[in-house]
Image (cartoon, rainbow, N blue to C red):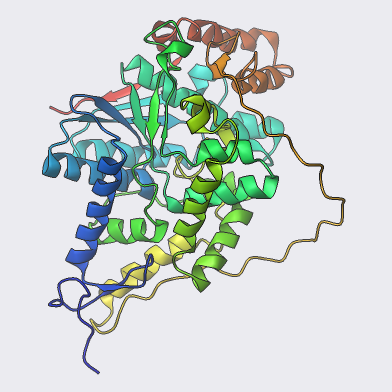
Length: 430
């Protein structure tokens, strides 16, 4: 049987079965199509503006590494005229984050981008190892997500950056849509489907406030499997070990469902994303109704999806790791046939909910303000980070709490306060 030819160039032999639509492509065409689609997402949504400085939320994982590589390539190819820097968060997870940050440092040199690393320890007075020791593994992702989001915003403000891009991909967004549907939380659904979340400066009187930060997701419509394929064929240097605290996350259930749907219908991921976008338009308090303010109040558990590079809750048999191993084996195998797409292990059956259905929830429009303690954007008088820190500090010796109180107090003064609460490492590239 004659080998299949690439569906695009019709010249080279097809070596890749594209996960998104099962088209057969050669390596050069796959790389070109992937980059072109990201460029289309950026230009269609007007994500970038000439002259702005953009901080890439870098974890060392495949998503943020591919994001940094693609943005550097596209910025040079299409002359976006933007300056790219790397911003990383050290959550304080020994045996995981310390290793992944070494990858980020190598990426900074490889892509010639300045790197700044911020730590939970000095910013909040807690590392994630300490948080898990106190609260246990169940629910720890909530703490991490809340702290991480604020750390990114505070770090960006300290650097004078008004735009942060994260590596959230189509799988992440589809999982978030399903999670909110399963929870019956349509107002949150309307906030998490937006490709851009920003806070109008009117919310804060301080132009340098860490609440005035724009966020965007250039990889929103890119499949996770295609990100892995791109990283493999471009020989990118990234860290692939999962976070040691993520298996208890609720996201794992939504992810298993998404993967089962994808196996039957390849377009299922984008179908769910598009459906979420359409449903969001019908919810009171959506971006269309609040000028985008509500979008930046995304709960930390949702903002943390995928962006930390930990594959939050992704316990479906280590699927991405298996796929990476399979790709490596393909390189050593005979050059016959197509690369085989790896699918997830069927999810374990859970117990049926025998309780009564919950009462209908009333969807209301949220009004954004600022936390009275730290000044961070919040729909409540006290933001979730301050609430979580207060709970953690109840069992901590009083002489240790001063570090956290000082960090929270300093944060109300905007950029200047943040400098006193950051464990910083700068890598400047000449």
